[in-house]
Length: 557
Image 1 (cartoon, rainbow, N blue to C red):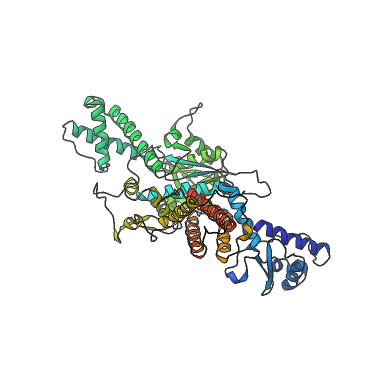
Image 2: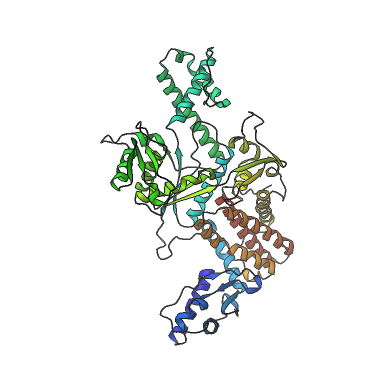
């Protein structure tokens, strides 16, 4: 609808130019926007203000000329000029009836767009990396927020014309993996009857003992007599596979699915020339003049790119800092042909963003990395802060939250706020089956429509006469449906899938208001067919929104 209106206005400007009424070298962008005040119409354009200087006329005079070339037939009911030259448009009922038809016929493709309208076939490639939890322990509820945010953002960007790959970066190298292995070894030795001291920096969660018990059940005490290094290596790999499998299982239950799992270990594996990706990346930076030596260590000149100090990549003992493999990983991302990389990180990584962007710029990928920082999740139960798990006495894990609350409410409430806002997640409120729970409210609207469709006196009529839909509540519902396309474009552009939750609730509320005002099934067969068409279209849009959020759309509740 917006595109149609833009074409009408552009044509009017073209006619005015041809008639010599406007001295413009070309038709300017119309740039429609929705007025904040509904009394100002459905759409507004500031085109007359923006071309006043070139046309050498007042904005209001230009607006009057443009309006004189606009026909009030078809989709436009009225045009008004306001203030210094704003052009406000009120669309006709026929325009909103057209929206209903379009939304229904396009189905799950409704609202799809392209990144570059001039080349609609072009789909820029983006690598979206998120969660990336260490495989040394269970995922916390913060990881749950990143899971919901990342997978929903991927869906929204795909709908907006991007080609998205979702990737989990496995932090499976470094000291934390050695501590993980040693923790399992100690628990295993305890099961074998040995009195051993648990390492001060070990992982003390109950899951470590569970892994040790699994090894004992499968292989007995044979590892008592094996060399320490062989035992540690085996236990590390065994525990690693268990934890990775658990992560994948929990994420799958949370309706989060990755296209690829990238292992940090691969960055240390030599290629055919005996050089690993980290060393290759360091060579690239050195050739660019971005590295220097100081006291035996290799430093990266991140201050050249706005960082507050330079950063060490290789320590004086020859070992890498954690920053070195991170740079190599991002070099690998872009070497795979991605146009954009997006990382979703916790807010505690804010100091890391500048140096990571500095690395990408130094490697030749300036402006191709976006980092989204998300605030953490505060757990409550009936308003009281929850810090400990009832089951383990330790932190509440993402898996436990899913088990108690369910994936739909968990995902929806994790997505309900912007990433720069903390999520206050009340477990008991999330479990409520009433209108106070936003996910239940939206799902109930979908189920209510499904119930209406089941009660329909006959199947949906594809040729229903939509010209009968002129009641104000019907028009308002159609207007809400029409907002979906612009919402997708903006949510993808701003990396803001949380806006879909607001839209879902507004659409559900608008439907409930319509349902209160209009009797859907009546003795008037034609009107019944038209209203059933409208509610089925609303159902389809609700289902589409929920699917982009990764939430189910139940037919019965």
